[in-house]
Structure formats: structure tokens, C-alpha cells
Length: 233
Image (cartoon, rainbow, N blue to C red; front, side):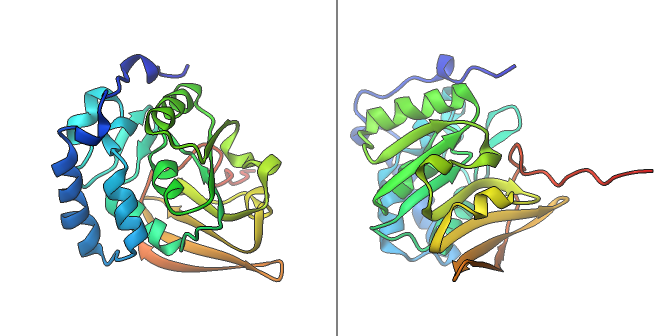
């Protein structure tokens, strides 16, 4: 049974002048910049995106703290530092078609929308997806396309993607997801092994996927990205 997010979501009538502006600046100055994130387009996008409208209303007071925020059962918004370092690793380009897998209430997709041409926000939880669409509309984020469907299947209807951002942990990444990368496309994920994980960058070159670890990080594993259970006799 899915938990209702929309029932708890209320939107500010004037996002630009909301009381969270200073907290947003503090997040960027005290959490993001000290983490060696210097890409100006990313800094500007994170200063623009009101993170508080992408979390349940009862968790807005903690929207800018340096940790993951629970959205609904088993689903979280990434720690701002982890998200920023992943987005920086992904090297977003203005011409990119990007896919955010596990978009939740839409924060990652909103930030990336300021740096790429188009973002497809894929979410399988209907209430989270609906909350994201409301937020995108409020922000007039017209280059974000919201799609609902199983995360592990990706979004083949809009593939190939120049950038795929897996917005959560992954013990394994389905082959179907890699297949949706364009030539020279980049995929960023947090590969989890138990409680330990690290951000990994994968690039498709001449049809071959090459991957390398970038930094240590951890995140709750997304549905469909669990390691298959070992067969027992």
C-alpha cells in the first residue's frame, strides 16, 4: 500500500521570497562547496531549487540538513552533499537528454533541469510522482517530463539518454538501464554492498560500458535494484 504524499504537500504562493532562502544558501556554502563541488551551473541550480517543496510538508524544517530525508516507506531524498557530488560527477551538458531513476518528489530532476536540455523523471510510486508533478508545475519546470513506471525498466520510450542519474542506492544495475545509454552517455549510481557504498561513474564508449568508483557514499537501495538472492540447495 502506498503512503500518501500529496495529502501532506502544500505549496508556497511565493517560492522566490520564502523563508528557506537563507537555509538554502547555508546548505550550498557549508555543505556543497566544501565537498569540492565547484561547477557553477550546479551551484546556481541548487541555489534556485527550493528543496523544501520536494519533501513532505512535515519534514520541511529539516530540508536543508546534511542528511537523507525520508519521503515515504523505504524511500529517501539524498543527502545534499551526496547528490551534489553525484551531479558534478555526471558532468551535465546543456544539450543532454537526462533520465532520473527514482525521482521521488522531484528534487534531482528539478536541479538537473537547469543544466540540461530535457529531464525525464521516472518514479514508480504514484503518490511521489504526483507530488513531483505538482512541484514541477509550481516552479514552471517545463523541461521536466514526469513518467510513472517500474524503476528497473528505465524509460525505453525516450531512450537513448546522454545522462542517467540513479537517485538512490543500487546493489546491481539492470542491463536494461545500461542499454538505454547513448554513445558517450554517462550513468551515475551509488553501488551498495551491504551498508557500504560508493558513487560509480559508467560511460558507454563504442558500445562498451566502462565504470570507475569516484567517492564513498551510501543510500537506501531503490526497488528493483536489489542483488538477486543467491540460490540455496
